[in-house]
Length: 142
Image (tube, rainbow, N blue to C red; front, side, top):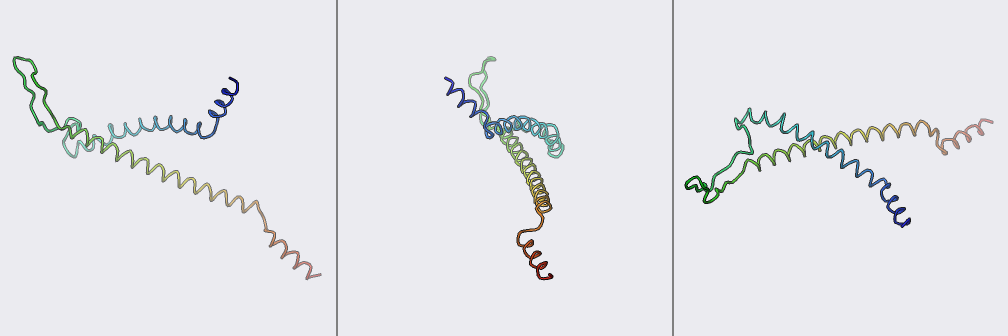
C-alpha cells in the first residue's frame, strides 16, 4: 500500500500534472471572461449593426406544429441557424483572443530570453581565446 501511495504522490507532484491543473483552472476562468466579452460587449454591437436582438432565436420553420383542441398533435420542426451563428461568433472570438494572448506571451518570453542572454554575456566576461590573446600580447611586450 505504501508503494502505491508513494507512486501516486510522485505522480501528483510532477511538474506536468501541476502545470496542467493550473492550466485547466485558468482556462475555466478565461472561458468566463471570453463568454462575458462575447455576450456583454460584442453581441450588443452586432445587434446594433444588424438589428437582430438575439441570434439564438433565429430559425426557419420547416413544419408548423399541429394543434387541435388546445392539444399538440405533432411538434413543429425548425432549423435553428441562429444557434450556429452564435456558436461560430463565439468560436471566432475565442480563437482571436487566444491568438492575441499567445502572441503576447511569445513576445514576452522572447524579451525575457534576450535579457537573460545579455546578462549572461555581461557576467561571462572575456572568452578563453581572448584571454590567451591578451597573454600572448603581454609576453611579446616583455
